[in-house]
Amino acid sequence: MRVLTTFGDGLRYACTPGDCFICCRVLEDIPVDLEEIRRVEALGYRDFYEVRSGGYFLRQPCAFLDGRRCRLHAEHGFSAKFMSCRRYPFSLSLLDNGTAVVDVKWTCRGVSLRHGERVTLELLEREFLGDEQHSLVPIPRGERVYLHYRSGQRCTWDALVELHTGIAGMLPGRLHASALMLVGMLRRLGSSLRGEVGVEQVRRELEALEGASEELMAEAASAAELQIDLLGIYDIFGELFGHRLSPSYAARRLGIAEEVEFTENFSEVYSKAVEPEAERLLSFHLRQSFMETLARPWDVVQSCFWTLGVACFTEYIARVLADSRVKERHARDALAIADYLNKHFSSFRSHAFPKYPELGMHYVHFLASGLST
Image (tube, rainbow, N blue to C red; front, side, top):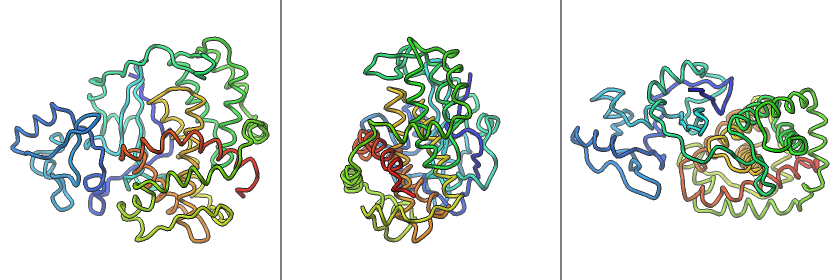
């Protein structure tokens, strides 16, 4: 089985059970299956899960949390824990072509770019995946996916994987440059890929993009269809932040700050300098978000702007959290807040996800306008 990660190289992980048990205490969506429930009930435990739309989930706070330790782990060993808990902060999806896609949750404080063991495929297979990856069943979506649904242009699953990994590998370490380059590459590939796209065609076109980063960014910045009213971004942020599961709510739940005040004063927020390590982290997350769309592929164009919407949302939170300079810890906290809302609250997802592509379009126009320096 081929295994891909959404995060590529550079991610590190170190479990910190002594001072962090957020995953046991505040996360809403910890899925379990009926077989696991019956196995744990046979050990004498009751009333630890709930049935909601989409399946079975552990109740929160977790009934097995004893102080800062998992009772199941302490009394019955690591293997007695639920699969979602054993894998956390990593999650696994299986594509129709047999490729396993591993994602990571930034809500976990053990995830970083600076501390812990480097996350390699060997580490994932040894510590998190094991033989369980062979029991996964692909979600049937057919043998073809769309590059652009409205045009009817399709590609194979293998070509889709090649396209995503190639694009993610060429994005630079600067957030705004990555955002513009992502759009520039998508525009160039959209005009050059023909017919039903296969792996060889994707490889040829990606090779042609090598070394053209400045040209691609300029092309994205001058695109006529990106000329959208900048003020429209206010309305989108207002809808997202006005939702009951707002970033300030998430920050309080995660213990990041006592009070977080969000503002729509873009001139003030975007005048703050961003330190290199903070930008590196936010850029890393943009590439990861783009690769994450492999696990739920639809229209590749839509996926691109969904990614940019998530990047805009996350960067805005980081800038609001900062006083005068955006430091690495502000970026880290922003990633935790966005991750918490996007991956662990279905009510927020249903509200925000349809808005992200539109937000991504506004974000690119905002960057192209030169107002984000």
